[in-house]
Image 1 (cartoon, rainbow, N blue to C red):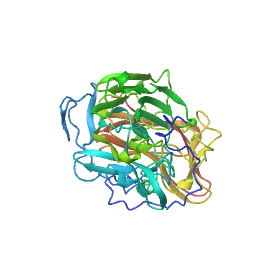
Image 2 (cartoon, rainbow, N blue to C red; image 1 turned 90 degrees about the horizontal axis):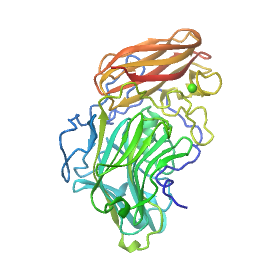
Image 3 (cartoon, helix red, strand yellow; image 1 turned 90 degrees about the vertical axis):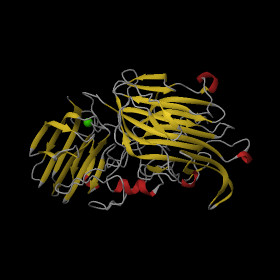
Image 4 (cartoon, rainbow, N blue to C red; image 1 turned 120 degrees about the vertical axis):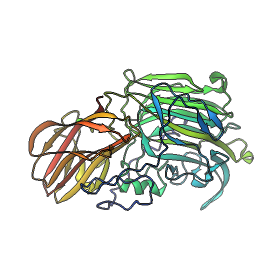
Length: 469
Ligand SMILES: [Ca+2]
């Protein structure tokens, strides 16, 4: 098995059985990422625990010194972790932890450390609790925030002494219960609290996938259907003109029209969306070192891959682009998708009242229905962060039984008072609009909320949230 794509990717397995969702909100006061709850009248502000934007033109001081910004024009630094200090900032990151052995080893939180100004991912051959004999171990981190269109950059020095380690710089949404990734308990906590979608494994971008002692691949692939779009294929250090074990700056740029991959500021691959269509979805950002084959010299371990920083630069323009994931609800999770999974959307409160319908959609084959056979309160939302300030418009097609005590399309956390569009009885698909949405906070929450009685329903399809000026 050539694990070039597979090992970076989370395991493609069916989701487990139905989860027992708690109703209502959750107490996440300790979390640096606020739960942006959306029952009207109780809307805590989103956190401000991200670095203040700075001019892209300004050099960026990192742990290893001052780095010239390699970001293309049209971007502003919106999020940065310099990996300074003495511990991983768990307000920014989950640990990537596997459910037991995965590929060739165990992904564990003790293999992640921050020291000397860099993130260290340790590649070990050592005892693992509950397992006999030495085992290969690795580690990784997954960002708690999700990032969309923008420029992603790291400076990295990779384990390359012998074959066996797969280090990667990439993005993908999380999926609850993913055996290859999702066993940091905070992930389930955040999903259950409606801070993350239960399923957001829609699109994967690989800034690099490096097989130690061998080569490096870059490119994109659909996660929702497992299709590779365009990749460089494995390139040796000589072909790339770098030393993998030395510090290099790796980056990609995601725009509505292209995904571009850079090495030390040089464009290495350009994936035009028109030629290689990909579903857009804001995604978690990952850094990981995964044991993928036996190391020929395990007594030489531990080894390390190091990251000096992760920077995300938000675009300053982005006019006309829909910033919502799975805006038409037609993304299909990979394996026997249950209609209870609303890919890309954060469900909250009575999650059983939020389901995909597969007949009568406005477009495609699927739409969202809020409704239940008994009384319910439900919200489907997307917390968009690191988006450009400006004036936006939100539109959606809806059908509604009427009679709910609340059925509403909402914009909140945009830097001003919440804006609502109440939805009454609509027998046919009808487009509704909230215009003149002035975003000043670099973020916005787009939500649909219902409080209804048994048998009532609100259907939603083709939601567009885009900047107009
Ligand atoms: Ca649809």
